[in-house]
Length: 93
Image 1 (cartoon, rainbow, N blue to C red):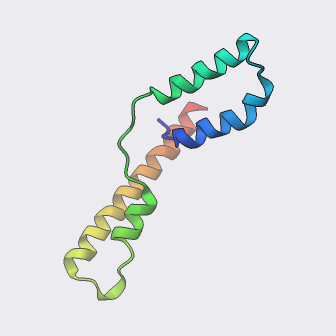
Image 2: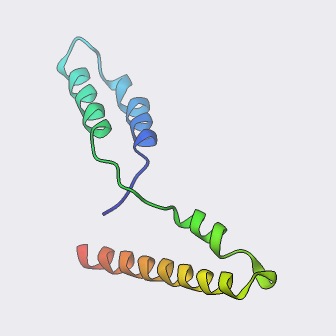
């Protein structure tokens, strides 16, 4: 599964495809339906990898041992996630 920024995607669709539609024809209706469908898709709960890295992996040598242990766990989770995503991408081709 690939998570996306739905708001940014809708803005892209509006910018690129709205000029191709005229509201008199069915194309405008279809475009509005697509935007509506995107809006009504379920939201996936996700923690951005950049936030995790900044929050848990950037304290340096002055952090406590428990912080370093948590940072190591977070780094391992990120590595595992990226590896799994790469493997899924390879098998889907």
